[in-house]
Each structure stands twice: as structure tokens, then as C-alpha cells.
Length: 374
Image (cartoon, rainbow, N blue to C red; front, side, top):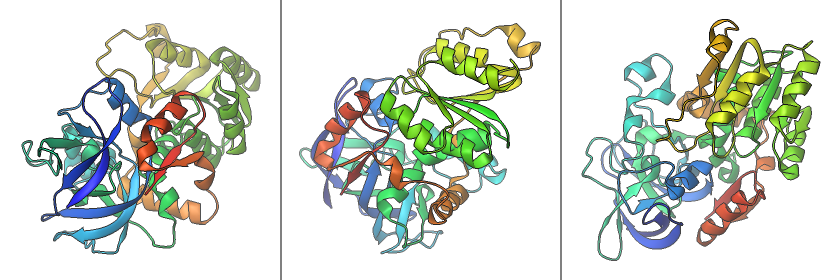
């Protein structure tokens, strides 16, 4: 069928909306009429070239929700009319990682940026309506489309009473931030936690730390608007710089430092990891969730003595170490109970044709999370 979607033709590049043809779903595939898509920074990383992809043109978007319009035969029992949230990380359910409770590391993730079907690198679900050129899918889903066809491994069926306009956010940003605190950072009651960078991920790391019982949650961002939002969603203090946050954490801990610092800046630089390491106590943890140029091999300015003699730990976090088939539903239940805030995360809504403006607003510091409504 024909649809419309936002693509980039090269990197660096900007998203433009074009006419596309999308395949009907085959076995194990689902076609979804999109309701909403979050505008995550990772899609901007693709546009800038920080994250290279396997094929151009490439259709963006990886945080979305919608209603199933067609369903191929599938083992999840998903049918037409079901409400689904996409997990940007697929889960096959049977590889070593899925079977051991680490669905975020599923082997299918190897194809996230290839743009093709997992099982066939020459097969694409999308093509340009004008000329038939194959178009890659971001994370195999491309939520910047009015209608998209995806693998069942990327779908989680959700209750129909939860608004999809905010449910879309648990497909990436909420789980990544919340899990960076709760899972990867192992925040405990009474902890002192620094969150470095308050965007769509960092704001949810603040929520996760608050849910886990941290006594002191220090949000760090140079943008006053973002510091204010962080305090509305659980931060106890807000600072413009890491120097200020580090000093504050030491005041709370008799000079020791934060229990964990979670790095959720828009574009991570090696020196930021050094700043984070300097902010934590002995046996503390730096959680690195933020992305930058993934080809950058600049050494981290980290003292080996800090690692060995102070037993500090640098912990990576992909999707906040979430298990999407469980955690997406768990987080939506927390939202239903009034514990997890989703509505408050949405700064502004956009039409599909305004996708470029949405990312400009993000760069200008005007958004915590922009959401496309279809």
C-alpha cells in the first residue's frame, strides 16, 4: 500500500516527508497504522551521521504506537485492531540473551541499522513510491511513517484503555532512562544520584531514581527549562554544571560523592565520562547511556587508580537493561496507577510534516520530548 514517511537521503542530512510503498505483512509480520511517534535523539544521530546506517534512503523513527491494520500469521496472537507499542530493540525470545532475561541484547539487534528484514539483508519492507528504490527502516520499524510493517518481534500488545499518544514513549525513552537508574545504576533507597543531561532520556532517569527511593537526585543541565522540568518530575536539586553537582553530592555524603552518576547528555564526549567518574564515591557507578559518534575511539580520561583502588565501575546501558516484553507493560501499569508520569513528558506535539521543526526545537533546548501525532 502507499503511505507517507520521513526519510533522510544521506548523512549529514535532514528529514523530508515523501510518498512510500510499504509491503503487506507476511508470516511473522504486523502492519500498523501509527497513532503517535516520539522524536528521540537517536534519530537525529542518524541524520547527523554519528550513527551510520546500512542503506540510504533511510526512514526514521523508533519510538511509536498504533493500531494493527493487518496481521500476518504470528506466534504472538496479534490481530487486526490490537493496540501495540513498538520496542526499538526486537526480542526473539529464544537466543541466549532473551532466554537469560536480557532481551535488550537479543541477537536480532545486529540488524537494527541495516534497514532490511532481519532474516534477509536484501529484502526491504519499504521503497520510494517514485522509482521503487529500497528504503531502510530504523530499528526495523520506522515510526515516522503513517503506516508501517514490522516484525512481530518488535511488537508488544498493550491495554486499549491507555492513550497511545503517550504509550509510545515507553518504546524507547522512558525505558531507557528509567532502566538506567533502576536496572543499570541499581539506585537504592537513600542514594545520592546525579543525572547528567535532562532530555527525553535523562528526565526518565530522574523518575527512575525517584521511584527507587533516592534521597538526593541532582539534575544537571545548562538549560533552565530542563532543570525546572526535572524538579517537577522528582529531582531534589538542579545544577548548571557537573562541577556544581559534584560539590553538592559531596556535601550530602560527608565528602564521598554520588552513589551513581547517569550520563544521558544529547551527544556524549569522552571528557564527560571523566567528569562523571570524578563525581562518584568509592565503589560507585557511572552509567553511560548517552550516544555520540559511535566510530570515535578517543581514550577516556579515566584514572586506572580510580577503577582499581577505588573500585569504581563504568556501566553501559542499552534500553536501560530492559526486558521489553515485560517492562513496557510494567511501566504502562505504573502510569495507570499514577506513579510514572508520561503526559508531563510531552513538551509539544507535531504533525509528520513538521518533523524537521521538531528536531530544530530539540537542538534549541525547547523540548523534553516532541511527539508526532498522526
